[in-house]
Amino acid sequence: MNSQIQIDVVNACLLAGVLALSINLLLGYTRHISVAHAAFAGVGSYAATWISIHQGLPFLTCVAIGTGLALVSGLLVGLPSLGLADEFLILLTLCTGALFTGVVTSAPDLGGAYGLLGIEQVTVAGSTLLRPSDWLPYLILAFGCVLAVCWYLTRSPYGRRLRAVGDEPTAASALGMPVQLLRLQVFALAAGLAGFAGAISAYYNQVTSPAMWSFNQTLLIIIMVIVGGSGTLAGPCLGAVVITVLPRALQFAGMPPDRAGIYSQIIFAVLLIGMILVRPGGLIGRRPGSRIVSNVFAAAGTGSGLSRSAPRARALEVRAEGLTKHFGGVAALDGVTIVLPRQQISALVGPNGAGKTTLFNALTGFLPVEGGRVFIGDTDVTMKSPAYRARLGLVRSFQDVRSFATMSPLDSVTVAVPARRGSDLTSGLLRPRATRRGERSSREAARYWLEYVGVDADDLRPTGDLSFAEQKLVALARTLASGAEVLLLDEPLSGVDGRWVETIMDLLERLREDGHTICIVEHSLHVVSRLATQVFFMEAGALTATGTVEELLGRPEFVDSYFGAAS
Image (cartoon, rainbow, N blue to C red; front, side, top):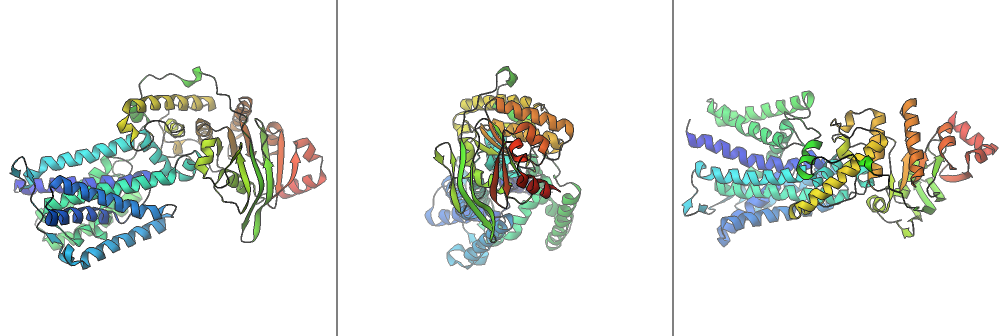
């Protein structure tokens, strides 16, 4: 076999690897699906080609412009996609890809269906890159640069936040993370990296055409990631090699190119279905990776956080005035006014459907209200996001835990520590020492809170593999690590056995002693009697009774409503 043909296959794998790594930031970390990824690569390819032909600018300049235009295109598509459900995001990006194909096919200046030819040859140090072997070292360099960028993004504190957003965006928002901003950044960055690959591909192939960046190409890129293993770095690279080499291997075996293409598509389909059914994590599965992050971004040998005492929470007041919310004409909240007693444990009780979780959602910003106001201290937060309220100290937990299932307990709690150096897109690169200090401090705080709740901070199992009670404890630890001073806990004791119930109740009493304000949704009268100094009874979206447990039990109407509903 001709050595140049072999090197050409290697070069094709390198370019495919860049595309796979870029879309892996979406699929593997923020868990977004874009079916316009090849179109973004096409933007970079067509931009670099057109500028080279018509403006005669140097290679690196054309590649930079193509990359930038692809990034901007990703930003423009990503903005309207914020908040969209996955199925609508797929539709939006599908239309984006179709629009790109339609424009480049119908525009005469872009070569129509045949594409653009005549891009300038690349010359380096007086030598023109003509053969695949000439290109090989520079494609290795380009691939290495993209791999380094992805390595930094995924192994840094910023990458940990991306993984949290992908695992459970609602919980991430409840902890104060700017979920939509993170998703937009990664969407645009992935598009820019795809444009980078597309621009280089145009110079390497000396042509760009609609067929090179069609919907089918996007599907191949997605298959590379799924087969290799999303959420890893080696996985997409391995998938790129498999998907790139297979059709060429069939041709090398003597199969005609047209038949090789057909059989390749059949094999890809079977391979994809088989991987989803047999090994959904891909050939290279994802691991929690706590030790990797800590070794790289934090100094070794950090001690136990329990050498310090628990921080004393401020007496932060949370109150709501006249909250109203309707669902289909039914009042879920009917003029609710409530003030949570500071540095005490209160309980919100009532029958199912009374509006307890709805009230928690309204207080924390997950549900917009139709009337009324919410205050944290003296700040009116009625129109503010859950992340904003979390940064002020109001955080809620969820009845169904919503753990960061692919992350270790230590990472799950570290990611909740308020943003420090390295948790945004650029500071880790610009200020590495500050990032390492911030990471060390964050991990010390995370270790403290994990040991506070009784969970092993060195357990490298994914949090999703822990018992339900342990997941609840990790969720409580991450809530505390976020700096929360007011905790809204939705049935923190549901689904756990008696031993864990006592453990969690002891923890809640300890938190009250440390100055935290806590409000729990709870159905067990035993738990409410032991923990709560004040009880709010809800029925049909309204607060109908307030007082101590003893006071409410002395009111026949409360007993009839509560125990009648419970029966």
